[in-house]
Image 1 (spheres, rainbow, N blue to C red):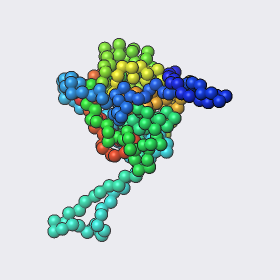
Image 2 (tube, rainbow, N blue to C red):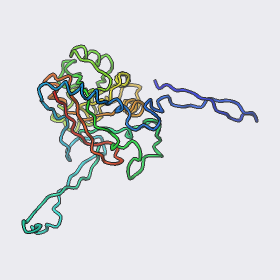
Image 3 (tube, rainbow, N blue to C red):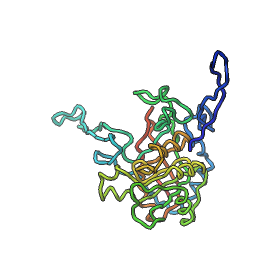
Image 4 (cartoon, rainbow, N blue to C red):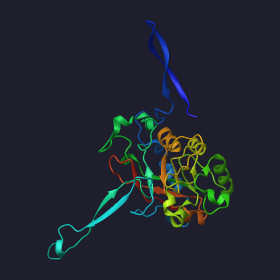
Length: 314
């Protein structure tokens, strides 16, 4: 339930000034300060980087991104196209006496396709976003003037994989299967893992198998994080939550839950980043439940979200 707080204002009633409650949200300003734009990334410290680096024992590197192309399933109406051009080389022309030739590329697409990080300007509640920033004041057609992905610092910290499909004894969970506190705690106990403040938590549901089974169904629904699970992870002080599906949260949503309410809880209310389409198959196969997590998003000024290829290192 969304909690509210009240302050007193004045209204005129029958010619008299009387006090009346003025509704205000309790999730802003942020605990990190009224002007803060990086949210839970404030928890990333040099000490946590050093501790996470100590998890590297074998040097094995796991790329967590999937390929992005015109066939990548995405939340509609998102799409992606790439065009290869050879400027000033019509008819086989080249440059200079060494006959240099080259290809360039032009992209027409959405940054919310493929493996991506949702910035804090992505999801709001009634046009109010993280830290109380109002959409009308910072959402411009030429880019966000606040909460853009260029503000996201490099995320280098301890990563934890929760193999929820393994917990349930299935290769792939089903669309509409919600992951909540009981599942999270059970996975932690089974794996002998723990979640610490400043961690990145990745949820493995096996949903990537759907890319091979039925790509059209991949973005039509998904297993994922539920409302209670989101509130629980937020209470543990995580920096980001990722999943192996297009939206990370359960779709169809739980009965009584709002549209993308998990996004609201994590992004808007707590400044926790969301990672989508994380390919955690190799991590799950190796039972790699704890690792060094590294992500650096391109600094595209004013962008809402960004295609990334984070890595896990053991």
